[in-house]
Length: 523
Ligand SMILES: Cc1cc2nc3c(=O)[nH]c(=O)nc-3n(C[C@H](O)[C@H](O)[C@H](O)COP(=O)(O)OP(=O)(O)OC[C@H]3O[C@@H](n4cnc5c(N)ncnc54)[C@H](O)[C@@H]3O)c2cc1C
Ligand code: SF4
Image 1 (cartoon, protein in one colour):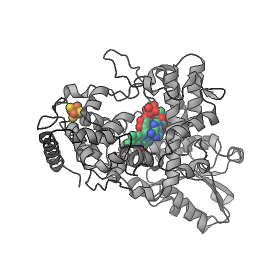
Image 2: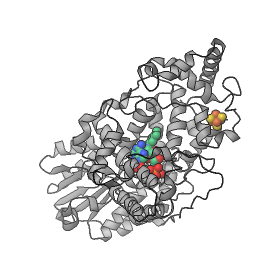
Image 3: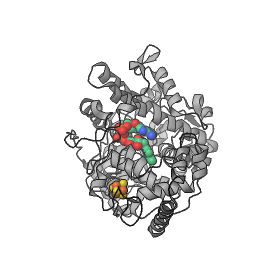
């Protein structure tokens, strides 16, 4: 049954395992790549480890080519490491989905019992459930231990009004990070006020060490370039850690060289500087190579040793034990109905420029470019530029969600969906965010150097040369006024629009209509 056309490297290293002599097996999903977070018996008893490369999954969206390389190469490296550590390994390449491949293995090996850790993505979990239904006496599903929060404790709280900040304080108390007895270190829970600085022109951003492409990764790059050539993104310059050892190196490098200055510039954007003092650790956390706890432990140690300032360490730890854990609880509480949520009822396809980066708007081309190149940008380009533009141009948020999902290397449905449909587009109608995140050109100008090199003028409010964000923003406030009027924190914006003179209101509407109608959409 093995269909393994592209695995010469892995075949050389993993010996073919005699399945007939094995009674216990564990299925390791591609985002669970660390045995330290599996139950102890797995390391002690060394059951058969099953890995599946599912082509059906690979083709289900036009995933970024580098993402496919990352997912496959890190799984292959991990499987090889396990084999070298004495585990029998079945590395299976399948045309179909995980459940079909697993059912076939179980059918062919009637003495085999199978343990699976509940997958973080809904569809994979549904497939695990199917396998369990078919062979209930031989299959067990254990809870996922790659996260920190107890989903069952918080799931029922997810509703409008329950904000991340409450959850975060609970998580601080539970983990003990940056606590001074019962109080937060320094007296405040949140130091964001100190974390909104524009990047000074003369600042040195430490270079990150690069990771050499080895034979295993080279083989995957070849596979992706021949099999997935029409997928999104560029393949050249793959430079991502693919083993735990390499990922740990990246973690230490971040803690030593960038954590201290992470906070002040975490919201800043600058032309050509895609990573400022950001960690770029989400990709390693999201496939299990690094655990959120070990990352936060290191950040706490750096603070205790006086190597990193409080506002940076607090901001960083909040992103992980706060936002990251919160969006996962939200996903568990809101799935599967949330997939179809579309509060504003926008139905336009995604603008073409999300695929090409081709636009006169410098901010948009600068924010799409690193996604095409490397499947990465930090939080603010994702939120305040790419999602903001999608909303202001009345684009279907589900299409945007799909783009983020296949375009970013750190995107898995449990994390991308809450961020896009909950946080950045308000598609869930305000369950996750307290108000829609929309902004005009002034915000982008304040947080970046983009406007200086743009063909549009951020100072002009309407007309051919005006920054499109300016009129699109007011047009959005006008058209979605009911939502803003109901919201105590945002109703002043409608009042500001209403105070504009009729000529200005007309110019805003005309410029917006023209811009939106002329926007090329992806079909
Ligand atoms: C529209 C949109 C889509 C996003 N999609 C994803 C996604 O698919 N995958 C993903 O991991 N993050 C996503 N995020 C959150 C955040 O942008 C990324 O986690 C972060 O930019 C990753 O880069 P970094 O590791 O350099 O982050 P840093 O700025 O160094 O932050 C540290 C860590 O905090 C965590 N984190 C911070 N904010 C969030 C958040 N809102 N949700 C979850 N984790 C968070 C990440 O694990 C990150 O590594 C999204 C945010 C927005 C606004
Ligand atoms: S002027 Fe407007 S479109 Fe141009 S970079 Fe600034 S915000 Fe973007």
